[in-house]
Length: 303
Image 1 (cartoon, one colour):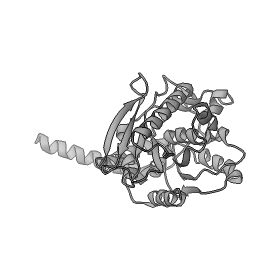
Image 2 (cartoon, rainbow, N blue to C red):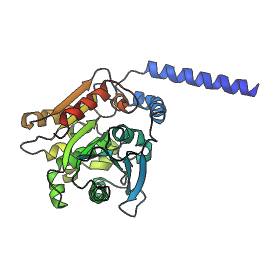
Image 3 (cartoon, helix red, strand yellow):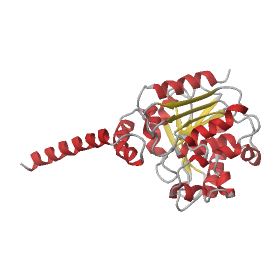
Image 4 (cartoon, rainbow, N blue to C red):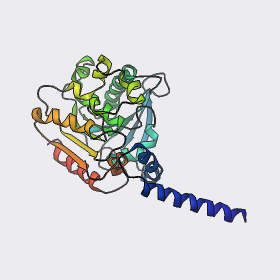
């Protein structure tokens, strides 16, 4: 009898969850949180074990490490490696939870690096920026060990991770400061991305990360602040029109700023009736988001 009640309770809980999914329209934070369990179920059901994974530290803090994910047969792409920054509002998530994302690129012959970093609210942009730079230097060392010394970096990510990827891609002073080639970055793919922090909702996570608006820290943490007079880096930017976490304006304002000065491959797609979670669905579904990413990879690939 107890088992029957447990089964009934699980069935009712599942039906209640489906009701919540259907009842709450897209475009608000609550709906995004309600959709997360199903998203994670799909992610964990996606392949992530057909690659070699190794862990490498670049500091003493437990968060200062990265995963290196390699094709079992060795990388077939020697011209580019992927650096993928995961989402989580600058405070949640680990590289291990996003190995399915790495698997997507590994299946296409890339070696993939997935960095971790210190988190808000205990650490803000200056410390996170230090971690970005330290992990970047470690990646350059690992490229030599993996016999990929000339490989350029294809950087990307989802949500807060896409913000960090864009900071790597567009803050050229960083490359000069680290004595790295200004041609090191080969492209940027950015999903559900806070690319212009001026378009973000006012929130504690944003304050913990970037500080007060109009402050130097806020500017430095804002990818739109680092744009040059001319840009040509291949970009793939995808955003849901009903994103309840990162307003579409945080991406569209960036695109408005870069379009007049950009030459080259620039894909900007706003997904109809789509949430923040929908922008991340390429990892588990062969859908329009994934096809847009594949098309962009093909068009922006080194010739």
